[in-house]
Length: 440
Figure 1: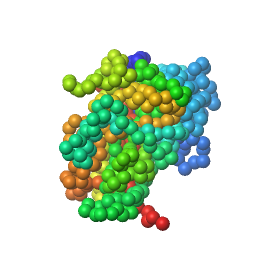
Figure 2 (figure 1 turned 60 degrees about the horizontal axis):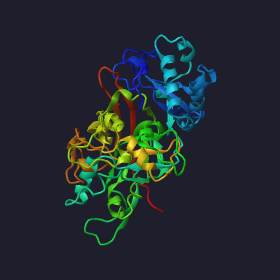
Figure 3 (figure 1 turned 180 degrees about the vertical axis):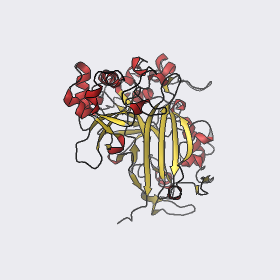
């Protein structure tokens, strides 16, 4: 696991003034990566690092060759149109680049004037998904979410007996992954209405979001090669936010016996910024199981994961409707959860994914599954917050919601905050619901 070092010093400041503002998501202690270009341009996408309200253009920086050694090699990889090469370089290379960038961006850096011309305002940028994602796997790692949803469908048996033993997951659709800001069209599929004898083809009436953490794989493993738990995080590049949009009425009809299909594969969106595990080192937390619960099997257990396998990461959902925007109202918070409550950790998910010899590749994406906390107000989906549509959610402008309506905009944010360290954030993940298109 990455250790706390000089890059996390809360006293560090940057010559980029906006990075020093209180509450900034992107102080010098963070330095997350994305793939970007100037908005509306035909420039090639290239890697960038967030610093305050700016992006340090790694393509322009690589041309200047300010770094040597491993950091220089990693910078050249980061200048490409996606971050796959950087991710595949391994945790050591990414950490070396982050360390070199930290020194170059400090207030007393002799490189300040040389680097200033490589800044691009975030407000003037557009993004793509940080990597070319070859495969996408979505886990179900929150026991609070699994139990709440289980109660809706199986009141007498909400949690299936395998849940506490095996990290449950399904193979998602990488082709429909999009970056924050993507407008999601309401999907159509088979729906079985209450009391009906046969399904109909219809646009979903129960469109939902799922508040998740995304995990980008760094160094891969060969087919047939397992990744041991103690090595799992060396195969992880970093974390982002993920919204696994879900059509609940389509899902309830189709999910047995093989799990999600059309209810999930129409869209998954991720935040543009990927926060490295190095940046998150000060915010690690213990991972435990409540007394009386079964311990994980040996391949998923160990002193290291128990000591610091979790992340103290706050996760927030806000909603803003057409009427709220017209009235000039701020988006309304719906819930806030914490990733430390996850039943399975990042390293456990990676290890279980490969225990049968499955090969992961740089840029592959893992979703954590909906992250919900133990309290009702910590639910990570409308399905839970509205009790399956039975308990409407009151909005500040007088509207109500059970599920998403056309024009609704969903906003995810996440941050880590633990004194004396600087707060670091993940930026925003947003998406707006568009009306369904008529099937041909």
